[in-house]
Image 1 (cartoon, rainbow, N blue to C red):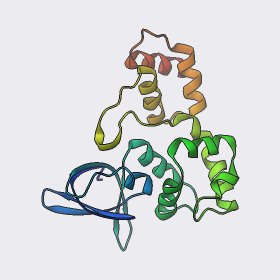
Image 2: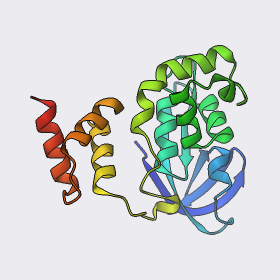
Image 3: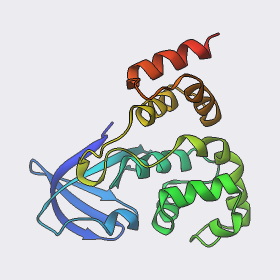
Length: 196
């Protein structure tokens, strides 16, 4: 699996871009939200990537933030939503705005996105509403530059990675979190409480 690409941006023609990594050119498809923040051609870029393997092709998708990549992966799990539609959704709406729409059942907002009809919007809401609470913007920004995060936020991300649902994560962390706790302590206490 190719999880991240770091190299020189050779070309950018939406939705495709080419990144040279040690003499190998990677063709990557990216949403417009990523394109808007790309550096100039010839400069160094870091992208979070997702590789899709099909019988007829290996497709590499790139994102400016881990949050975009996570949402892309959640979208393609939804029945009837493929990579192209997931890119269109990410191109038309920000990560937080999408999760807000899913939480609030705002199908009208989602139907304004290209390729999303009423049935698809309803399916997105039904299948993604329960996941919406666990996703916030990633502590890693564009080009892999770390942005400060809190131990509580890091613990919530870790619990989500372990498969806990957003409502359960909130319940567990609310019950155990104190200001002086480290990420590891919050996770340990939350897991202890979860198995009681």
